[in-house]
Length: 486
Ligand code: SAH
Ligand code: F3S
Image (tube, rainbow, N blue to C red; front, top):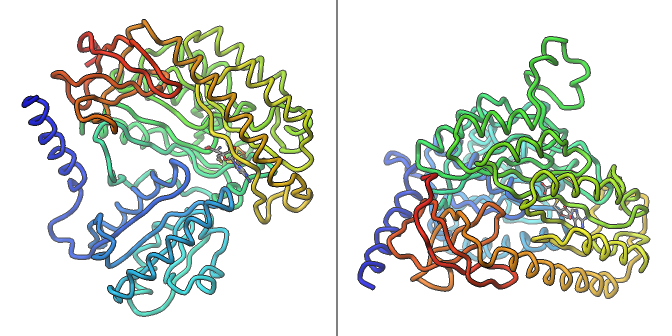
């Protein structure tokens, strides 16, 4: 008991230091930054904090003492935008007691609404799109001088590869490393190609430097991030779509995602490597073979499918069929039998019939996903679906279908977690369990959460854990020994 108490205090100290590690003594202004939406936004906020650290800003967790409040926004569904607008109301209330506070919006809503944001939300002083963060020093000078500031220019080559991110709210163990920006896929429901621009890849050298640096700082797991990681292609810089125009030399020395994975896995053989997100139409067998070859690449693929109906997939401009998706799943399972797979699904896409919905349920039965992220269709202004198709599925039907797929996913998740019971699995400890101070929380290779009594292990240890029991979301076990991989 005493042992655990002491450990807990030490952990908190370690965490506190990690949080403030990058705050500089000479910095006098305070930045409060909040992120919504995808992992890429959280990663971008770390880039923004790094750029602003050089401008005299330290981050703070206290809204009321902030000189500058930044909110990194998401436009993926209408609800995400409403959440941000509600938050802005809260900032308004804080501004009454802290009138010097400036407010900036970053990310996808900034890109989508541009200067309209300034008219719609009086609290906002500054609007900055995802490719314009390096302009923040100038934009902040503008608002310091009492003017509003906007930069929403999208870029052909900005990857922020030369900015070393400040790790925000870090557990000191896991970190995101972005590898591509933008998306060229143009799924008809999706706002991302409009808000994040065309796809471009980051120099593999700068990715390796960041990964090595993270390892040297004690991090044990990284997630390579992109809207569509399988489409990664470095040929010296420039847009993915311009690859055809590259020289023969550039083509011959180009680096694709499978190669990048191999480079990262080889550079840091003890670092766990994850990646997200994979798009079925772009995932190659080479990537799966590379995953199978390296023990340190985690056996987990987030492989959104959106629908099980061929007709709907086509309407969504997802460039694969249901059968091709099954073939991909079969190939994954044949090469990596214990690979976990997760999905994103959308219910109630325009024209979706009961039969289409049944196709989604039967596709799920085939795959039996380990996890899932499921959404009711939300029409996004400017997308192809919004322009061409009527949002014609009534809200109650969208919701009912959503409930059905969520319930089925729950069953499959339990089926999958049960397969782990009785096994000994390697778990990387991320921190104390939310439910119990006496337990650690970590993940196995398949990304399933594992909870077990602390004993003498510590955050950042790889531990072999015997799995004794499970719920549909969590494995419960007990430590056997430290893994040889420490
Ligand atoms: N490739 C991206 C996908 C981003 S969007 C990635 O890195 O994750 C994440 C998920 O949101 C999509 O897979 C899709 O299931 C869902 N989504 C996107 N647009 C949506 C919309 N208009 N309505 C409902 N869900 C949507
Ligand atoms: Fe969106 Fe499709 Fe790209 S979901 S992010 S357009 S792969």
